[in-house]
Length: 510
Ligand code: MSP
Image (cartoon, rainbow, N blue to C red; front, side):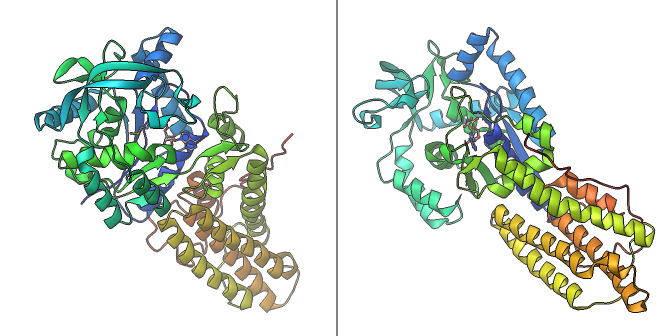
């Protein structure tokens, strides 16, 4: 059976991870976990992009070798993934032999087919962006600051025949509506492709850059870092071996909006096409996390460190916030005030409180055993009906990556369950001597327990630890696949509840 293959972008090895890198991994992890729960055989790859000028320069500045720098950064990224409960199956590093071998194979194959040719290049070059520039890249007659120092150069280089594939690419994007999510990003790519594209310079002379993969047909050059990096998606799953077809084509490449055009939407499909390799099925293009409205940068000192937030709030709270606040595709603003408020109100008040109420009442009125429901009156009926629609809508929203909306629906159900507790007021029923009220008391506890079980299971892709803790507190086990676990049931009847749990203790901003 073919795996469900999903990837993240591979991060640059020249700096530490920030909230943006963490977000991409959490988003991909949520999709991976969700699909595992649906019973798919998921294969999730992330990794590190280790070559290039910036890594070479950073290593020089720090007085270490590029490899030492990359080894340290790889450890940092892997540690972050561990803290975030990212369930990746493989971590690919572009300095690994398995990766370099595939890059070599592809370079050689394209060179032999005449898709890569040598030519003289005269023009401008931005060292900071490792990019050749043209007059049209100037704004008001000047080079935008983002390019750093721009120098005029003249040198021989190798070029990849991009331009001859332009019409084919336009056609592919137009015919495959699901190739790029959200759809408005596909429009942006088509807009870019209205202008003729240039062939891609895929080499850098070793005089300028040594930290890269040597071209197999000319040892005086290394490969352009993007050409090398994109290939990780196939080198990680054994391109050239029998294994490859189990994974490829990828189901989803999850990337940020800044690297869609041109690398992922233009270079990558054309490299694959030139190699006769099928294209990935789809790109999921997310937006950016901003800090108080502006781009995070080391120089402004507004970079948000995910580890600090995980330390203070826990991994699930961090995952919850990122997925709750971001409408996939658009940008979102991070602020600690918003984080704290989501934490306290949604996780602490709505979800955490519901569990502790349930635990307290079950201990007090039923000696710690979940009772069975005795009757079904209006309040129970209403909650069950709400669950049926919540489940349907939330799953549909998960399927279309609208996780923020799915969470909103699920928390409406959790709040409705809290209101149900108020309506039933088990503490009043407990005081009543009537048989009917006693039945209502037992029913109300069974109902709340079941509502909590269902909510925790559907939230599992987003807050996996909390989901497990709730299930254990309810006296039942964690689940691997949804199967029929999202159906309203009586599986909790007779279960002995666990230790008292305070899920999300209140945090004051002070
Ligand atoms: N190395 C390239 C990707 C090569 S993929 C074959 C790269 N690395 S990166 O470290 O700069 O970015 C890695 C991912 O993090 C990208 O998808 C990028 O869009 C994402 N983010 C970087 N900053 C971000 C935010 N502030 N917010 C959300 N995601 C952002 O690009």
